[in-house]
Every structure is written in C-alpha cells, then in structure tokens.
Image 1 (cartoon, rainbow, N blue to C red):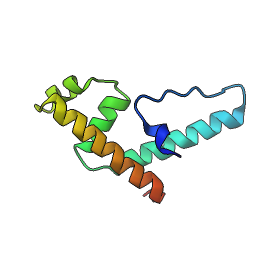
Image 2 (tube, one colour; image 1 turned 180 degrees about the horizontal axis):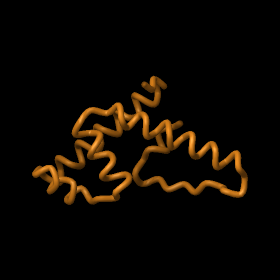
Image 3 (cartoon, rainbow, N blue to C red; image 1 turned 135 degrees about the horizontal axis):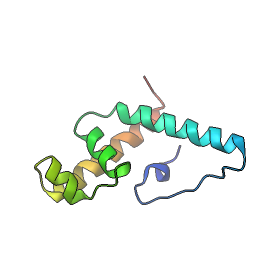
Image 4 (tube, rainbow, N blue to C red; image 1 turned 45 degrees about the vertical axis):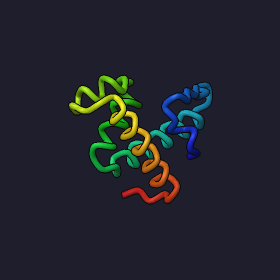
Length: 92
C-alpha cells in the first residue's frame, strides 16, 4: 500500500467486474482498518472522523473542543503515523 492510498483527497474507483479486484480492495481496506486501530488517541478518532465520516476540520475541532487548526495538525500527524505503521507492515 503506498502513501497516496491514505490521502484524504485521493479517490480511486475499483474495477468490480473482476472478483480478484474486489478481493484486493477488501484486503487493502482490512489492512487499513487494522492499521488505524493501532493509532493512539486522538489520532485514531480524528482520522476516522475525517476519512470515513467526512467531517470538516472545523466540525472535528468542535467535537474535541479544540480549534480547526488543531484538527488539521492532528489529522496530518495521524496520517504520518499511519504511513509508518503501513510501511513497517506490523499488524497486531
């Protein structure tokens, strides 16, 4: 898995006409979810809220009673930590 696959601005569409492509996408998704679970708080929650729930940084900041900038920085750091986990390939 490369770094662009966890970029919040990157949208890729899988070719679902081939069962192997479906399996590969599911496998990548599983690896990503396992890696996210290894993040410490608040990185884990911020990454999930931004990437999966598609909340704005302002909304995330409000949830944590922090600033929009705090949410941006925390998300960026969470992505960096996620990349490190994925590079190491160590999944509990």
